Structure formats: C-alpha cells, structure tokens
Picture 1: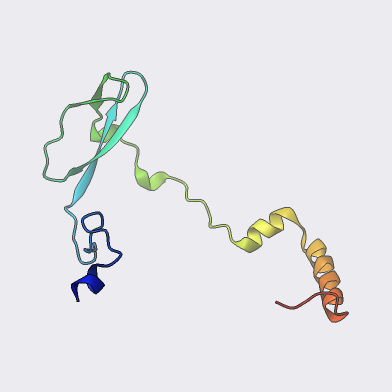
Picture 2: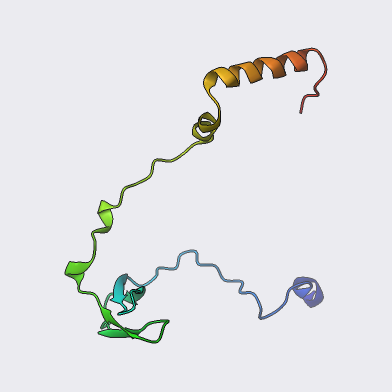
Length: 116
C-alpha cells in the first residue's frame, strides 16, 4: 500500500497543504524614497515598528516617506474593461464585419467550408 500512495510524488519538494482557510496577519505598506530616485514599497505587519531607513537596491539609504506624502490610492483612474467586441471594433467597422459575415455564411451554405 505504501508504494501506491507515494509513487510519483517527490517527497519534500511539494507541500500537500493549501492556503484555504488561512488568515494572513493584517498588513500595512511602507514607502521608502531613495536619494537616487528609486521608490521602495514594502509590506509590514500592522503592529510592526517601521524602520526609519531601508537599504535600496543601489546601495543608498532610502528614507521612510511620511503618511501625509503618500498619494491617495483611491484617486487612480480606473480603466474600463475592454471586451473582445471592443477590441474587434477597434480593428473593423460594423459594416465591414457584416460583409465578412455574409461572405462566410455564403461559403458555408455552398458547402465550401466545414462546420466545427
């Protein structure tokens, strides 16, 4: 029975656990500004004390941005969702689509096209 249940499974390389039902600790984002123009956004636990400085990828010391300086995330413009129909209408007009449909239906009815 043991060979059947373990066959094909690389033990230790994959977890059999899932994240289902797991509640993550509440988080806050801290933004650090590097003197070389880089911006670093890091997640921290809400009860963690934020370090006043963080080492940037370029090696410089980035300073913690104050909460007043952070842009309001709700002000970002939301792009409307583009459907397949919207993208199709960007390439062709409805008149062109009607002509193409008529041509394809004519070929299909004449037996020159296979269904499916």
